[in-house]
Amino acid sequence: MRNKQPLPPRVHTERAVTKKTSLIPDVAPGVIRIIPLGGVEEIGKNMTAIEYDNDIIVIDMGFLFPGSDYPGINYITPDITWLEENKHRIRGHVFTHGHLDHIGAFRHLVPKIPAPVYASKFTLGMLQRTMEETDGSYEPDYRELNPEAHDIVQICDSFSIELIRVNHSIPDATAVVVRTPVGNILSSGDWRIE
Picture 1 (cartoon, helix red, strand yellow):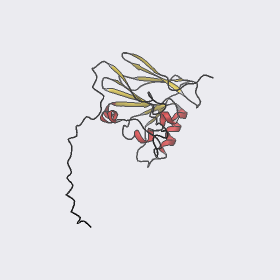
Picture 2: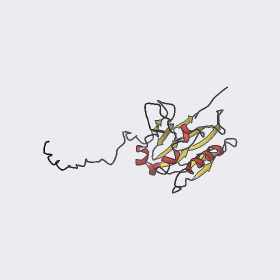
Picture 3: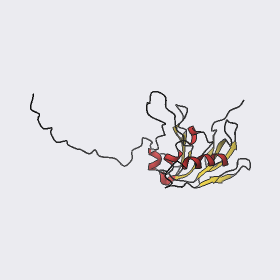
Picture 4: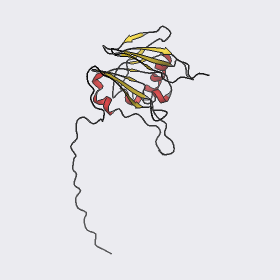
């Protein structure tokens, strides 16, 4: 039997951490930017940020149900590093409908990037239901919009929003019209014609 030599002490080194960790560059003033944070390359994880000057709004916060290539993982949420770094600029979260690929990450992400929450009545109910599964330490500021009344809300100087009814397999599904100083944006949400 060989003599066991004592292991050398472990050396712990710390790497320099930069304050800004995201890969999203700054944008020039007066330029609008649409940043898909999920839902582009996959079905699920739907989340989009819209930025203009010093204001940001976020549309949807879904998760992705992974396949067999992610054993033991229940769901995947969007990477919100950039939003966390800019949370002081987020003016509102807007939701199109209550399917989990659009609201599933809400309870995990909204406490990290708090802002008023805008949605139709049924969708707000679904969001509130997901928050019941948390420890209750954060209560979002819910604001109901009525698509039938064509409610338009001026969220900040840069953005106003309106929800428009669309046909889908869940009640109260909507598209979102985002009005900006440089033009209007339509986020269709999910819709289905049968």
